[in-house]
Length: 143
Image (cartoon, rainbow, N blue to C red):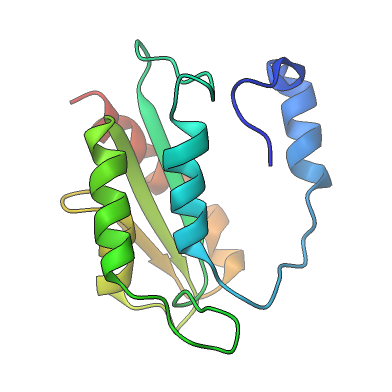
């Protein structure tokens, strides 16, 4: 995990290299709840070098309903609570669902009330949706 406070990644090339070095094979569990918690607690904070004078945008990609070890689904109220906390910080969250199993209502809970959601069936379709995701994030963030 890295955040805005790590000056090593202030350089665009270094940031792109770090992103490219992340593993392509994901763990079998989908823990979107932990990603939202980390964004709220560690990323969009003074310690995480959040810049209050700049728009805050969080793009969350998920491929399934979040599950705890053993396959138990995460209580969806967690998303509501976390998305409200993140939104209260002035962060616009765009939820991007990938796959046939993700439900629209789950994406909306992840994004938060009134925030944009995007859904595709395959990872390969993401490239075609990049402009729509950017447009959703950028047009909403300047409101």
